[in-house]
Image 1: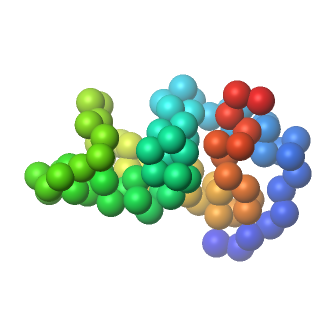
Image 2: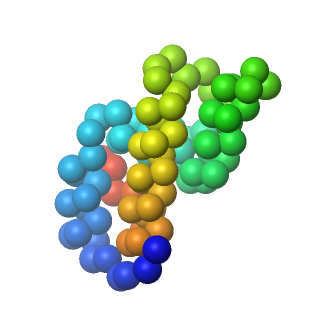
Length: 88
């Protein structure tokens, strides 16, 4: 995906438009996986495979995988970390 420079105002707009569930995933990614979406996905994959995992997800794991991939794309395209703009 082509990376473009995103203004802070645009990043705040995008972060503000996230659903509550997406914001929760962004916060979990920051707090549990040090902003690593890849580690977050590996943890979900481990849980789905019955292996040890970090965080017990209590809702739809496959849906979270789709949301995480979308959030990864947003961050890759903007060059920003969404967690920096959640709660601003």
